[in-house]
Length: 231
Image (cartoon, rainbow, N blue to C red; front, side, top):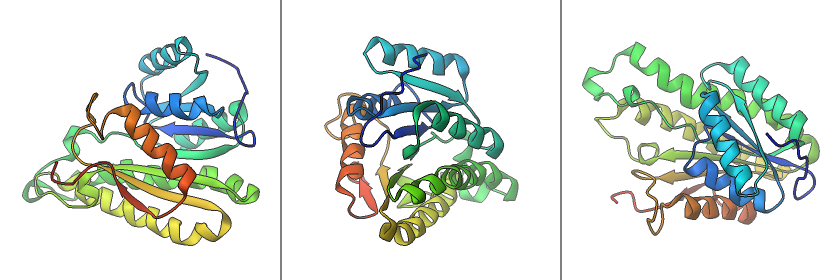
């Protein structure tokens, strides 16, 4: 892994929570091109190392940090290490892909079935924000990007776990948006209906990364859509 501390726009970094070879890699390339230090957080060490190596081959220095978003201590330790290595976290993207077993039909969903989705989408998001937010508030700038599937906007009876958890995450993020805007901290949500599709005119990873870069730069509004909800 690179030990480069070259960062952009005031010496800050971006950390992507839930980084993978699709959207996470594309975001790393897009923000890294602007000079930001890039930190990537994921559960699988081997896949994370492979992603960092691929980015390095493309001229994008990044560092990987292992953590399960359902373990608040692991997650905050990873974010703290990223800040120490790369510089203050100026941009946090929270975008872990939900587990398939979170998508049970509503009539087959009991209390225990909602624990995982809530830990994943809400507790993890809150832990991540609380780790990076004090530094953002101290500096008077920052961006929090939340990336969710279509059930964040329109609940689906066959995907009860994500429908409930994404709704809660959306409410939390929207509250942050309202409260933090006067402090120079922008909070945005990007909803991506359906799958991320390489080559798609709106949902190709590189196009989505460009959209997220635009949300960081434009700093207007809370909820944005990558594509039509019925697509």
